[in-house]
Length: 198
Image (cartoon, rainbow, N blue to C red):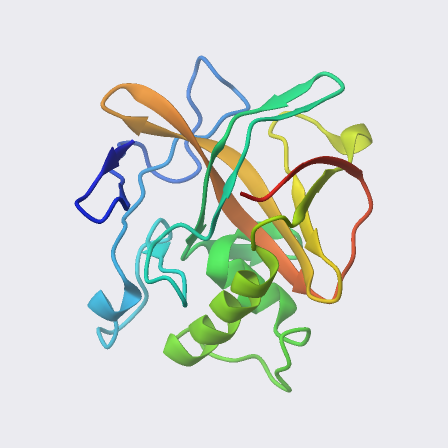
């Protein structure tokens, strides 16, 4: 992965979100756009779904990092975790900030569904920043693994964040990263511990 002078990842990827490489049928290659959302708003509409959202405290794009992880019949590569603007297609179907907000606005403390925008973005990113911290356990339910593996990151009392391993197609390479699929405040999950957040 290329890095800038501040040692932050510079992501220059080719394929659109959700596309699947023919040689790796369970792996997604994604074109990310690492620009802060204030570069988009107050424009009308919403950014593309592959727009990368900054961490609320570090001002970088990486929410945390994962180590190499091993389990029964499983190997997950080390890589950074990113939150994309994302999409929401319905219950248990979507990813990123949009999916978290549309699917779990009640758990986030709202009385009615909020609009996509800077205020709700702050609520979602602050929640994720509380869960995705160093030394948090990474759990995986091995019995449910099919195709793309989704480790669960859990912090007691804060909630659960589900992430999916994807690969960047940078200059012909496929460097791994983890995309936030969803996050549920307060929910605890069971599973075998396969590592800890770096």
